[in-house]
Structure formats: structure tokens, C-alpha cells
Image (cartoon, rainbow, N blue to C red; front, side, top):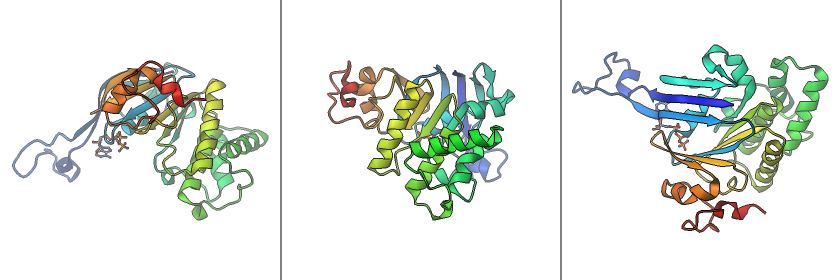
Length: 269
Ligand SMILES: Nc1ncnc2c1ncn2[C@@H]1O[C@H](COP(=O)(O)OP(=O)(O)OP(=O)(O)O)[C@@H](O)[C@H]1O
């Protein structure tokens, strides 16, 4: 379980980043920076498929990056499986698999196979277990047989798929994907969606960050909508679609936003 308690995350103001210790501009006005996450209390139970939605800049990425300590909150606490993240970063990173918006940020090896194996190797898995995880993860993103391909020679979408495979190979309690479909073509998107569906069915928690609900609305148990760093919507997809549309989140065209109820399920065959 991921538990956030009264979480606030602030980015330094421009003047402070540029070295003015007082954080004031040329007129002496205090530059307090951006409050990206503003007093958020949220619990993500094990096994839940949660969508974190909101317009650009609403705080989605900052929020989920606190889950495994990539962003440290200014105030409040984040706990994973009952342990505060800042007390055991290793445990938090083993429990939370994270796929970034920009996959280049997380690819660490020269080859596809090496990269996907990196996580399980660090967990101390046996060679046979590493091989099993790498095969399963590459299968999940339609990249079987590509182990020896060089990362540097991959397209953006292929890199994204490798990043997803790397997170899957960790077999985390919660898989967090930040805008996972942005660079994927249709077959790759379908394959990742199918994998997320199976993972969820098998009990893994899935958190998808998006400003476009169309792909995931049929999979989600719950949608949390952010605006200006605050949770302003929290509920089932069907019940929250009208409010999410008002936040600037893209919702399925087939949904009647006045209907509420189970409208969000209409894309799920
Ligand atoms: N490294 C940073 N330095 C300063 N401000 C930042 C930084 N990262 C994010 N912000 C600001 O924090 C706020 C929240 O940003 P965040 O990236 O968390 O939002 P988001 O909802 O994920 O946006 P998007 O959908 O565009 O990815 C925005 O106002 C953004 O400009």
C-alpha cells in the first residue's frame, strides 16, 4: 500500500535557483516558486488500478515521483507498505516500479537485454530467474528476440517499451507509468494495455498518469483528478468523467459526460 499524508512539494523560485539566497526578484518581491503538490492525502491500496489524471502542470508527475523517493516532499509523509520512504529507499524502489515520461532518463545499459536485466540483477535474483523475468517482460512489450539490440539504435517508442519491460522485470507491488502511451504505435499500445490488464488481474497495483483517459478508462478501478496540485476528483471512472472533462482531461468520445454512472466503462468490451 502507498500512503501519502498531507503531502506538499514545492519547486524553488527562479531567483532562488539562480543563486539569490533571499529568493527575491530585482524589486525585492519574494519568489516562493511553484507549489506542485498541495496538501495531498491519498491511499493507494495493493492491487488497485489507479489513474492519476489532470491537465498539464497539475502536479501528476511530481506526486507519483514521491512514491519511491525521486521527489522528496517539503512537508508530509509517504509510506510504502507501512515504512516511510525516506527510512528505506531500497524497499520503496523494489516495491514501486516506475516508468518515466522520458524513457531516456532511465535506460542504463548498452543493450535491451542488459537494461531489462538490470533491476532483477540488483535485487540479487539468480541467473535463471533473471532470464525468466527478462523473457516475460520483453514478451509483454512485443520485443522478444531483441535482447542484443543496442539501446542507442532504438526508436523513441522502442525505448519506451524497453523502459516498461525494465519496470515489469522488477515484479513490483505497484507499477507506476507516467504517460506510458505517448510515444507508442497502436500494436505496442495494445500490447502494453493487455499486459497492464493481466498484471492487474494477477494482483499487481497499477498507477497510470495521464491527461488522456481514453486508453485506460476501462481498466481503472479509480481515478484521481488533480488541479493546481490538489486532489479535486476521486472516484470510479464512470462517476468522475464529467468532472475530469471539466479539468481538461481527455475522455472517451463515446461517453456522455452528463450521464455519469457507468459511462466510463463503455469502452471496455
Ligand atoms: N524541476 C522543476 N522545477 C521547477 N518547477 C517544476 C519542476 N518540475 C515541475 N515543475 C512545476 O510544477 C508544477 C507541476 O508539474 P508536474 O510536472 O508535476 O505536472 P504534470 O501534471 O505532471 O504536468 P504534465 O502533464 O505537463 O507532465 C508545474 O507548474 C511545473 O511547471
